[in-house]
Image (cartoon, rainbow, N blue to C red; front, side):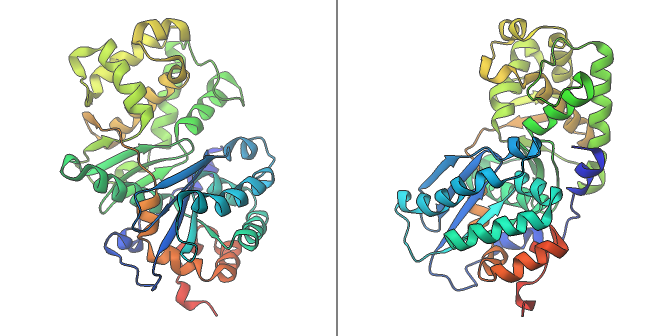
Length: 364
């Protein structure tokens, strides 16, 4: 994604971002169903139920290839209709979908086309799909992490690295961008390998290429300091860190890592030790599975850049099965928009991401 386009994904923190944390079902629904619609699929959950069900749909690849979301419309409609039935959710629940990184990208590429697609999806499923701003997603992430970790969440922010986007989210401040595991590696592939394919072969990487990657990341993370007044402490809650970065650092620089913590100096040492290796040599050196090694170096650079940008010396690690469902289910604004699909889509065409933040009560 071009630098300017990535910049447009950033949203200023507004008071409404965290308002849902103490929300109740003020809109009066007896039950709610929410759909977490990420870059690689849809997960459905319901209020009062511990059950969730999901389906895989790749939304990013067709967008990156310039084909838009048309090919995903039919499987999306099928999933919105089928997932609640498969989970045994009540048929009369209020329903809303939250579209995240891929849907924000689709909005950026062609707002009118996306609005038409969302209108078709609603007509065929009765589900209003909202394009959720980056920082609202971050707020959902913090809310969900706090629910799952309880007293085990001892830092003031969580780091959630998805496929398309990442969030640094706390109770009162957040920052996010289109720098998830797949999106960040794609940027590196473009900048260093002149390749539009991701994952690409980043290794071996020269010292000059490492410097280029670190400089690019410092630029992309330039807004973090202003958005997150320090001191910032971080807990990483997603698999790129728990299954890749943390165990690799523990193997390569054990003096600065453990099962649940990564020290920034040790991470930098580990990066320098594997940058010049091939993928096969990296597997031998780190013990990381082949499934995770393709994104390992880029993820390590990403985490290093985040620690530098926040001024944090260490990163706690706590893998959890985090989704946006708890936050969506508690979000009165989202469900109020779900009752006004035509008004929402009209505002989406004119206000873009700002449609979510506008007031549903002011619709005609």
